[in-house]
Image 1 (tube, helix red, strand yellow):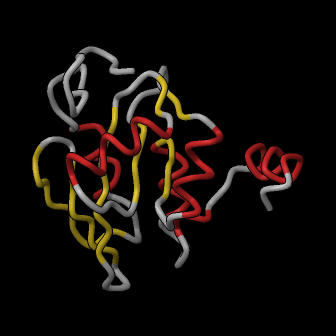
Image 2 (cartoon, one colour):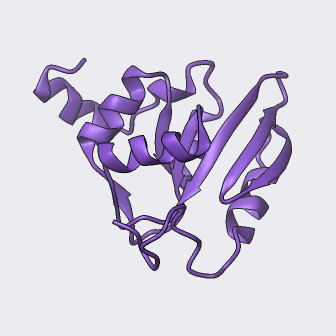
Length: 136
């Protein structure tokens, strides 16, 4: 469900992604960040690999929104939920993780950037939930 728009790609409420850009470029593992437009970015890590990320402001990001996103933008390495009032479903997190695609809040993404397998990053709460579901 889009936050403020019924059309893809669920544009930022503020019309820009400056908060994300400002936070991410100061991260110690990020060498560069280049906007592709429509909330998509090419992020190069200091280790040399590049991640294609999408910034989303969707109230509830689920599997259907993931499929719509990759249909519109193609392959992604991460989807980042860019606002505190929005979130994602555990099923979407699991599906993305199974496809080696990270699904994160902005803070979670900051932690995931330290890992080679960024898509596998789980919070303690998510890890507990995944274990209870038998997903780990």
